[in-house]
Image (cartoon, rainbow, N blue to C red; front, side, top):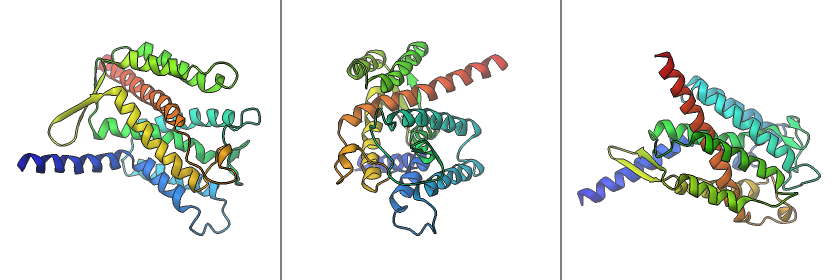
Length: 264
C-alpha cells in the first residue's frame, strides 16, 4: 500500500513537472483553442496569436521561468520553423495552408506559426531543467548534428526526390540505441530509452496538431471542406522534428558546458 502511494505521488508530481516544462507550449495551445471563441475587437486571429505568444515569452522571461539562453533557443527554433513553413506553404508545395488574414505575415505564413516549433524547443529546454535530464551513452555529438542536418534537408527535398524518412528513422535508432535519458521526478532517478522519449513527445504533438487544425489555426488539403484527423504519418514527421529540436538543445548545452569548463 505504501509503495502504491509512492507511485501515485510520483505520477502526480511527474504530471505537474511536465505541465511546468510545457508552460509555453500549453499556454500557446490554449490560445489556439480559445482564439476563435473570444472577442478580438477587430484584431485578426493570427495577429492576436503572434502578439500573445510574444507577451507570454516576455512574462516567462521576466518572471525568471525562462532564462536568456532559453529565449535564444526559442528564437532559433522560430527561425527554423518559419523557413520550413515558408517552403511547405508555398504554391509549388502546398503541404498545408493558413486560410485567415493577418498583418504579421511573411508571404503566406503568419509569424505565430514559428512559435509552434519554438514550443517544442521550449519544452525540451524546460524539461532538461525541471526533470534534471542526463544522458548516458550520448557522446556522438558530431554524428547527431550531421543527422540533424540530413533530417532538416529531407523535409525540403522529399517533394522532389525520394523521401528518405524511413532511413533517417533507422539511423536515429542505430545512433541512439544505447542512449538512455535519466530524469528525477521526486527522489528516485528514472530512465527510459531516448528513442522512446522522442516518440512519446511526437505523439503528443500530433494530438496537439489535431486540436490546432480542428480549431482552424491551419489546415491540410484534406481538411479544406471538412475537418479530418491528421494523418498518423505526421507522427513520423514530428518524431524527426523532435530529434532536430533535441539535438540542437543538447548540442548547445554541451557547447556551453565546454565553455564553462575552459573558463574555470
